[in-house]
Image (tube, rainbow, N blue to C red; front, side, top):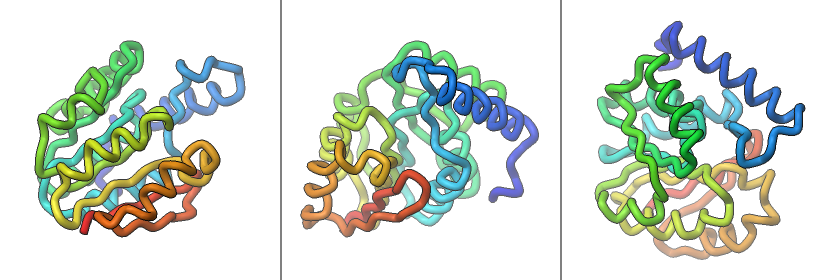
Length: 196
């Protein structure tokens, strides 16, 4: 799967990695930063998506589309589309540019809006990568889990780097009888949930 990263995707990934690095150094306001995942996390979520059951692949928090590119690799491998949600207008524009330049417009459906209120349109979700504003994790989780197929996988980013902020969410998930959950200590920490 990873050998199939096109030159267009590599070029766009490198471009976004450079912007993200500069954002973290130059004091770019938090809301404007790309705040994207590291490549190792990208490979991890792509592997998990490829191993998930049949159904809808979803992402909440597109930003500029970096993680979406990794997920698109798995979607190509498993013959699915990715539905990704982004609420900020300027990030939607960047993500559209990313999907166009990376040749992914046939695989990725970008939805501009608040996923918490739009997920109810979908059912049969088999995979979701959650990487939005941390205050909304629990609301998103509660919208997704009832719509997930048995064996579906939800991955929540930043479970270690934002552990204090996410503590109520993490405690809730660890005690949720609908899922099995495990914290993976990869980079910023990935909470992996599998629906029972």
